[in-house]
Length: 151
Image (cartoon, rainbow, N blue to C red):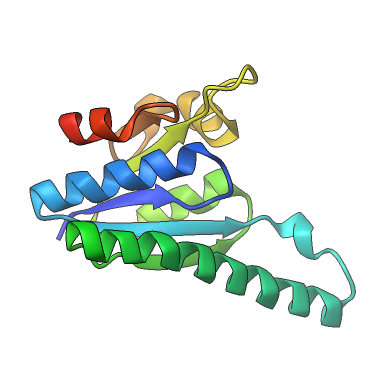
């Protein structure tokens, strides 16, 4: 089954990316994989403290994910799967795509803020031609109605 890979983070634009991925998956018979990446710098502490922080971060991600997963199940009939990786976001995203041959499209949300579309979109846009799957960038300010109309 083809999957849409979407990134779960704390950005506002993440919501639209997840909505779009779920709607496209529901309309095309595909699946959704949600990827959360824990940056390594968050755990540069003593081993015991770092392990506790890592566990707390994973728990926070799972709670955040479950909110979106419930919406996908209830509203779109999609059963998403969650993958949590640790490392730098862009290399981990590319590694996930490489390791899961069912991923067919990467869906990212773009920020409407003055600082640009966001660090992941900016980093990946430097190498669009070399990406292993198509990239869909969803504007963070797009309305739910417009998302539904185009998906």
